[in-house]
Image (cartoon, rainbow, N blue to C red; front, top):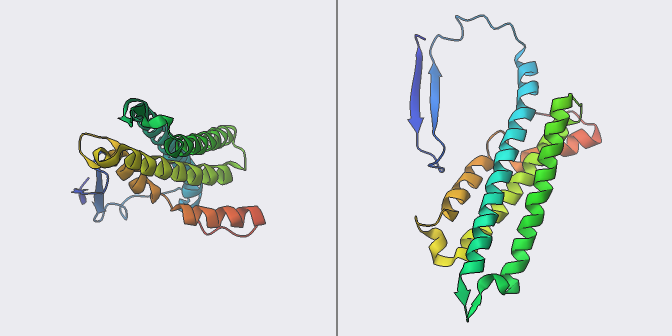
Length: 190
């Protein structure tokens, strides 16, 4: 359309293309009959759930990659995965991933059924998934050692995606605040 321009942007996550759209005179010439607040209220829980699902998938893939590495990498004649310093944090990552996965399923089911709890569950899934992904990627880089920072290891790519996704459609802190407001029956600010 006339007046529409696109510009690519460099971001923290090189695996996700992003850009800016500039609408010079495009929107005012269009007639928008939908209520913007209603469209946003319908869209955001879907976006939060989708981002949470992506984060759970990334956290799960990161855990799998790290567990494989811990089973193969040897130190003192034993796989590093046999040491408690590796086993216990990886077990904690697994627990965080499965908790987030369960919340994503609950949010998706609630959205599918038109349940009024869907926005609350979507926010809860988003927070749990962001935390699980961040935790999984930080452990992956640590347990891969110096190799985890190299281009040959995907741990840094997962970390970048986790960090970039964390702020899309509201930070975990924002969602926690809104979860509290919803639970207490207070007005939500978005």
